[in-house]
Image 1: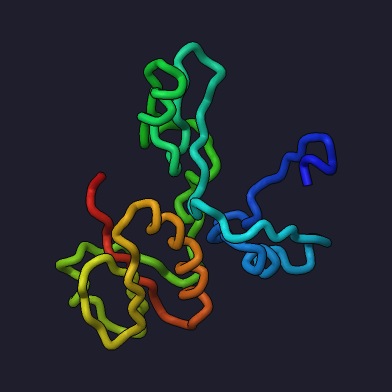
Image 2: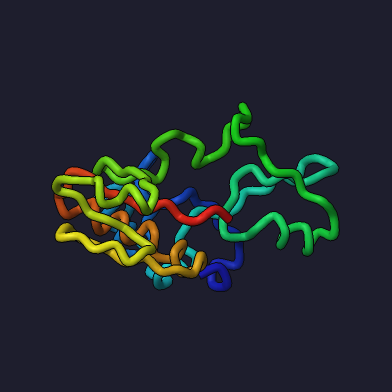
Length: 173
């Protein structure tokens, strides 16, 4: 499209404010139903989670929002140190809203050892070998694969009418 257009395009994310990001054309069509005339299907997103945002307006670049591209990777390309945005910063960056990228279904993160204590009509997204009679989605152990399927799985579970989605806490790092 860019080659045929011979120009640049600028577009926002294809999710409504606070909604889970779509990761394929079908989800975009569903998310923006009736508000766009055309959705180009370039296949499923390779990464799946939000992009890294870097502020390059100062002498020392600063990561405003972490994504799949890490600070280490940015430093390697730039050949200089990169600052990280402090968690309690007043800087307004897309994705900082408390429920940004959240499903409509109440979603909580639970430590592995507390999973058996969760009761009710819930869906579980787990890394461990936790067993449940509820809907259980085994998430990939690889950080890249986990990121790739995260929003797709959240969107799928959100449609199924559960009272809650329980996400097993991922390991530090």
